[in-house]
Image (cartoon, rainbow, N blue to C red; front, top):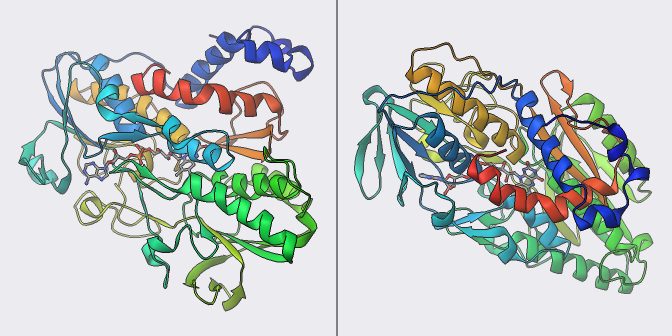
Length: 464
Ligand SMILES: Cc1cc2nc3c(=O)[nH]c(=O)nc-3n(C[C@H](O)[C@H](O)[C@H](O)COP(=O)(O)OP(=O)(O)OC[C@H]3O[C@@H](n4cnc5c(N)ncnc54)[C@H](O)[C@@H]3O)c2cc1C
């Protein structure tokens, strides 16, 4: 569906009440749909293959389920098997709204069995090794399984263990939290709720005395570029007494440091400078670039930050950590892995076709691909490419559908306002005909009230 009238979307012409009543829902969803096609440069040929091929998809997260639903349609005669251990599927983006006190953990969970498409087999098992020379994977329970086409969608692991002195047990204690903290395999998730309590503890402590808060973003590719920024800015709102709890304003009693591992916060120049301008308005916030967390002493409440110019030590009262990420071990130790560079260990795919560079019957999507974008939005676009290009590969046709590098980071600049950051390899790639650098209430409302439904009921059915 195309945009019929820009006016419909202008803040001035669409009241919040109308929107929530659902009056605008249909056109908005239509716009989201048109964005998929554009962003993936998909011709949406709905490429079909009638080959009775054996397709294995590894992973039942965002990419695995979306790809399974799409391939079920694109290859109607294929035998499709999803291999994944997780009985519960997590909507990970929703963890930020749990931290904000607006969702519960249960809101973000679905049984995986509900999401596996009809006609697709789910093997609740874990892949332990890949043998692409013999077109097979090895699993924990079933052993060797062979395939004609393999789609790897195993996500990325949160590598908290690479931070010296930090143990998973430290989260939720001694002032340490991370909204990212979850266990995809077991469906257990603690990060959102712990950060919600962490906000309360900071607000309480700041009433007694000045508090020092440290946020850290790792170097290299960052999963969900918005998540740390969301927690920082929503936290500042809470400390100003503007969150749901509406406590006293203690914002002048906290000093905040944001340590950023790279020389940028958002990997798109245009959006990076806009985000910096927004952050610069926070008078008690200092940002250190090219500085990543290498060591924590939870007892002494000190950290070591490693930068270009050596190490520096800082003391904190409260610490929020975004994890470095790494490829799951079975991928990293396999012949599918990229051998060198910053994305070493991730699946070495062509950045446009998502086909493996050395094994043409292997594809990858989502966080496990050796590509910079690590978001659900990027993964959804990649699923469109997988749908067409796997069907094309089976039929010996040209892999004509292209991934543009599209990703999105919905930055919650405060309660009730969100900036919809969307870019691809060429630069900003806004879906909607509105200035993308302006935080708007409408993106907040869409994210809070619609996206989770869109995710579970449309994207997870390969319908958007
Ligand atoms: C706090 C937070 C906030 C976020 N916010 C946003 C946001 O606002 N917008 C956005 O677009 N994205 C956001 N994301 C990122 C988004 O959730 C991920 O990028 C997306 O889920 C990646 O999908 P995936 O399929 O690659 O991996 P996942 O969804 O992580 O799934 C990986 C799957 O692989 C399986 N697996 C792992 N190892 C094995 C094995 N050995 N054998 C078989 N299966 C295996 C797992 O069990 C799981 O099923 C956020 C993430 C977090 C944590």
